[in-house]
Amino acid sequence: MQIIPSEELSNKAYHEMPAISSSAVKTVATSSLYHWKNTTFNSTPAMILGSAFHAMMLEPEKNLVHDSGLSRRGSKAWKEQEEFLTEDEILLPTGEYEQCKKMVDGCLTKIKWRKNLLTNKDMSC
View 1 (cartoon, rainbow, N blue to C red):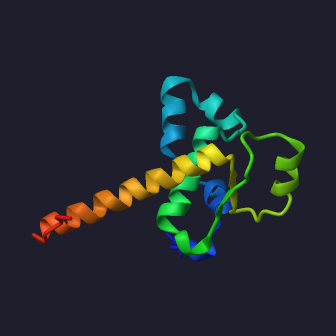
View 2 (tube, rainbow, N blue to C red):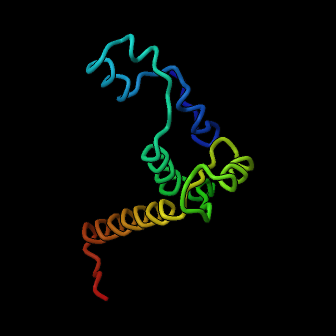
View 3 (cartoon, rainbow, N blue to C red):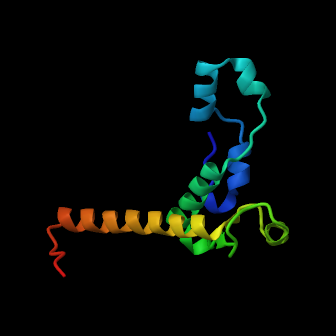
C-alpha cells in the first residue's frame, strides 16, 4: 500500500483511484455488480457541496472554494468562471458558498467548545 500526501493528490485524482468506495458497495448491494461497473459518475450539487465543505474545513490554506457571485449554475457567466479553475477548485453559487461557510464555522465552533470543555476552560462571555 502506498501512502500519498494530500498535497500531492488532487481531489479528481483521489476519486479516480482504483478503490472501492462506500457508494460502490451500496450500489452492488442494492443493484448489481454490473450497475457499479457500468455506471458513469456525475457529481450532484450535494456532492459538490460536500467536496467544498471538505476543502474549506480541512484544506483552508489552499483556497479551493470560490463564490461565483451568481445565484445558480449553468449560465454563460458561470461557464466563463469555470474555465479559469484548476481541477481541484470548486465554484459555488453564492447561496451554497454562504451555506458551506456556515457549516465550517459551526463545526469549528463545536470543536473549540468541546476542546475547552474537555480541558475545563471557562467559555463565559
